[in-house]
Image (cartoon, rainbow over all chains, first blue to last red):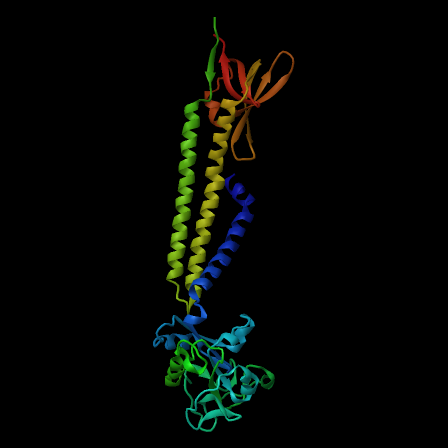
Length: 203
Length: 163
């Protein structure tokens, strides 16, 4: 009799399960995020990266006034409309730089390895094709195909994929609309610069 | 020689049921608050970089807590609520006297809201009728010696025994 009563109300149990899943997932998203003013976002356009570990590593030296550092692949933009435009730092391959140039902040030269276009510096080289040396290499894989170990023969279909990259130079750039690039665009703080320096310190 | 009327319901019973209902509702609310508290704690303990284990833990706590409250409501609170409403309706309703010979049958009838009723057949001079008696009152009803019953909405509220 009791089982029958419970089974008769099965839809209530199912409904509560669904409410639980959506309610807590949404609540978690709310409390685990921070407004742009208190967050530095790094977007990378590379075959693969250990973005979570990289974010944790960068948060060990989090700039003052910043609560969260996020590291996302560009494909994440498919789920969060407008997110790349609100990012602070981009890590982009040389061949992709032209397509995002409109979003980049002209920056001071760092050395002879900068990306220069029309006399303006837009990116600092973070990975060099000539030497194979790069920063944050233990977190970001700069060549090959997603899911295929570096150096392994890529899938012949892969070169057409957005996740496939020939070996090429990579640059670290800044969003011209970033809220954390200090005097460059009149932002209140320069937290993105600190985070960028920390990325250059990563092995 | 006067007949003796035996009441099956009284105000004390209504008061006890009300207290029981309040306690059960309060228990459900307390369980709900405890579940919400546990969920908030679990959520705050969740590592935002690796949210899956913490989120699953929170969802499991919330789901099981919610199911417990739903079950409590279905199997306990709803029945007490119906019993309270039933007793109140009997005490406040208009009584109708029915005379005849009464037989308490073994047939049990589960009302929609989950309260068991027994059926009592009334064999009178003109026709046979059926009344309902709350299962918990069956032991108090002396059908062999009853000569008249007082029913409210077809439910037996009191009966008379011939002296």
